[in-house]
Length: 64
Image (cartoon, rainbow, N blue to C red; front, top):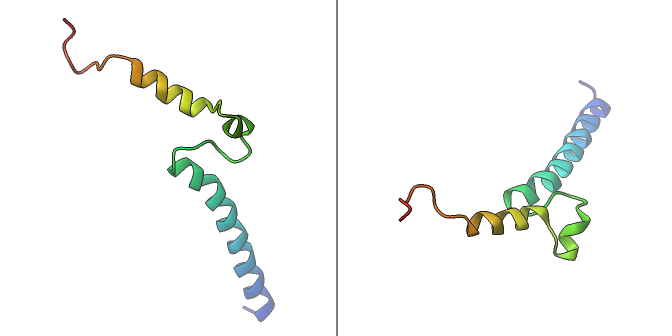
């Protein structure tokens, strides 16, 4: 490998890791994905779904 090819590979890997950090970082933290405008306005679909699931009865407990 030449020096230039090595530099190109390092830069390409850095770019891929940078974009994966943005995409996976918010997913791991439980937030919305990158570019989700409703997250900033407080109407995130993920948060709404979590709220609805919390209101549902637990299926593992018997209902009386």
